[in-house]
Every structure is written in C-alpha cells, then in structure tokens.
Image 1 (spheres, rainbow, N blue to C red):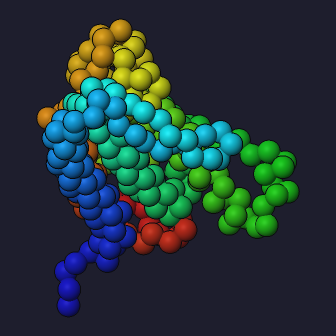
Image 2: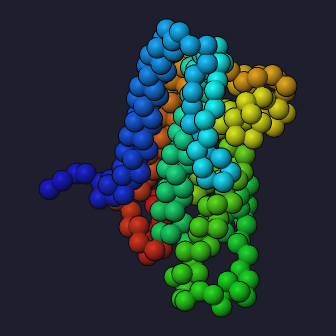
Length: 262
C-alpha cells in the first residue's frame, strides 16, 4: 500500500509545470544571449557602414530600411545588457502567478466558504449582482465565476498582499523572506512593463527594504539579477507546494465536500 498522499499529483502538477517553465525560459535566455554575441561579432566584421532590414508598414506592406552598423551594434549590446532579461522576467513572473492562481482555485473550489475571507484579512464576501444570477446557467457556474473573479482581484493587489491572501486561503505560512524576495521581483517586473525600467515610488513601496533603486533611477536587470530572480521564484513555488501538500495531502478536495483539515 502506497504512503504517497492521494492529492500529491493535484499539487505537484502546477509546481512541476511552473518549475519546468522557469527552467525553459532560463535556458532560452542563455541560448539567445549566445546568439546575440555571435550576431554582434558577425556585424562588427561587416564592411558596409549601413545594413538593410525589412520592416512592416501600417499598410501591411514590407519596407526596406537602412540602419547604421554602429546603431545595430548598440541595439545588440543594450539587449545583452538588459533588454533580453527584461522580457524574460515578464514571462517568468507570469508563470509564478499562474502557479499561485492554480492553488487558490483548488482551495476555493474545494472550500467555497473561503470566498468569505477578505483580500486584506477579516471577512469580505463577494458581491453578487442580479445579472450574475440571471447569466449563470446553474449554481456551479455562478460559483466558478465568483472564484475566478476573486482570483483576478487578488492578482491586482500589491505582491506582498496577494501572497498574504494566498496564506489565508491555503491556511499555511510562507516565510517572510520568501514573500519579500518575490515581491521585489514582481515589483521589478512592474517597473519594466509600466515605467520603461525606471524605478518609481510604487516600486520602492512594493519592494520594501529590498528595493534596488530609488525613484527616477534605472533599475538594473542583468544576467546576475535574472539568475537571482529565478532562484527566488523557485523557492517560493517549492515552499508553497511543500506546505500545501503537507496540510492537504490526504484531504478530500471535491467542491467543498471535503473535511476541514485539522
């Protein structure tokens, strides 16, 4: 008879998917880096002062543009310095959020009463309009909509707050250092997306004591930081997985019919 918790696959699949995605993106980033280095060397050897490129126009036609070799080399260097890692950070954070969302979905679907847990502590029952009731084909569909609505709302909170919400919904503890380390990563991602890589007061607030720049300063996002960010995200995923599995490994997780874990 196996001693493996019966819900191990339920929790392991999202964890494994997230870890594999982070690994794949890290590997692709390294391959892209090697490719950019080789391209940089190849263009540097070009004798022509300008290089031809084909770009699309607003009329969906192709247009020929000429770029100075020095400009292309500059673009390649900027990508090697920061650009490559900025794009990769955006995608990796999305995979971590998908992992956290999957765990929230498992818990709230299995224990619907946890919808009453507020985003910032205390009770916070979701609002149900008459349109919600009329548009739902049955109670199950209405519940599913409420669950997804609550999860979407959680993801728009400050990272430290939605990690605290994850703790309340899963009834587990995530070490504070892991929460703040990930919060800084998510805050860096937000600066890349919304502020072109320039830190602002919101970044400092989200990152707390781990803030790496002051408002108005360009946020460093190089190879070393990207590696550190991957480590932080993996640690958060693995810790959340291990504590959720320990608490719910043998708990019935079927639409609220399971027993409440002790």
